[in-house]
Image (cartoon, rainbow, N blue to C red; front, top):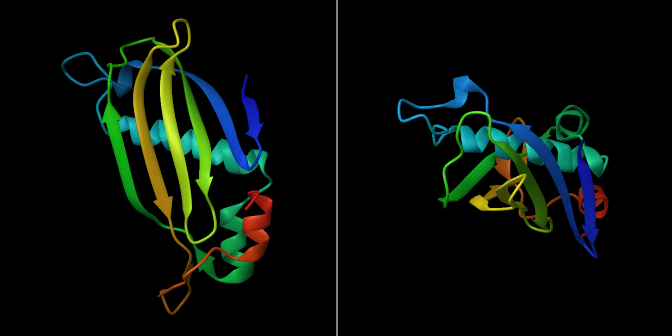
Length: 143
């Protein structure tokens, strides 16, 4: 079950997940790179909840939205079969798309990881960086 949350202009979406065996490293905790995968699942669900399809937008408008920056803070490790919630919150969508992330254990609410991802608009085929997010996307995202 997923859950959409809206606080004024800050839209959030929570996705429940469970750590599979293949996401573990030799120390039996989630390998650090897999947290980005969890963030992508939540980011995609957030955009879907807002009716934003960046893939279709690319085809219709010759724009792509590459991730240009990510940051993560590891607080508490996730382990095999841990049930957790990955929350994505839209923080900005005027000049770039900024999404904040939080991963917490489902049962206790203990925060395990926090992060942020930033995406920009790039015009194809010129690969020209745009200095803002198109107005229709901004509106759909509440900005």
